[in-house]
Image (tube, rainbow over all chains, first blue to last red; front, side, top):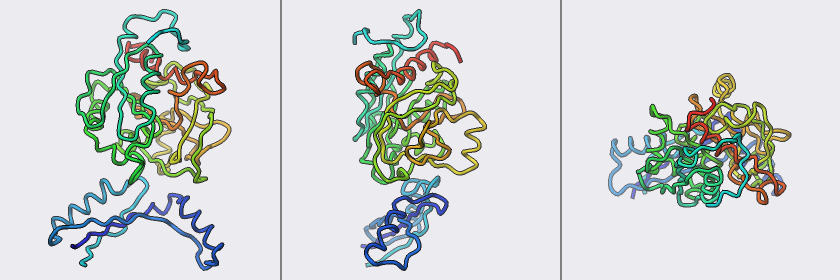
Length: 83
Length: 250
């Protein structure tokens, strides 16, 4: 069943307290190569059948209107994955 | 409901119209503070009307309160799913209509109002990442809205604050506009408990009929239960809207 993947990230200018906490914890496990961490959200929308242009357009609209809040977030990726 | 509770607003001559007002309180799955909000409405002298999120009948209410809690478990984003409830569509239309239905969003209700675009900006996690529960001092920055007209200008009040996603954010342009148009209704005093931009605790829309804030006025309406067991600073929200409805000051 094909899936449409939607990735949403907090806007770069919005402080990401969760990412900051993760960045603070990484060195404690010896992962000290990373300057900063930003945490986002990944949605997988499963489609029964072929992903048509119309279905993809619906996914894009859902991403902009419901899956993300444009005040604080950006939709950074919408792509189709065929399994 | 008995009336043996203190009225702290300026109501030396309460009138019949005041007690006739019908204030709706919306319940979503996961709402926690609807009963406290309804009690605050009754304590102020009005009639509380329960509104269910899935209904689309506002039932001739004169004003609406969207109370706090964790509607839909804060899934997706706080308030993001509630925004699409049939009742919210009615409330958004009524708030924007000629009649300018007064709407108060408290905590999760404030988050729902921003997700509904009735108020600008959004809330993200507290900057310190912890849930916070404390008695919070606020300054009344705008005492001309439907929900704040009973307060003195710059009055400091103490009401409970309890949230996880309480950090108010908006872009600089929006923040400048809010300040220039006197739409910051409340700001935090002494300490910014969640990292909110410009210490904003609550805001209003341009017309002043829609107000949202993170702290909880409905938990500070009765002696014995509010901050320091005596605080009733929150009751004026609910008496203010009655004054507004009978065409009182402002």
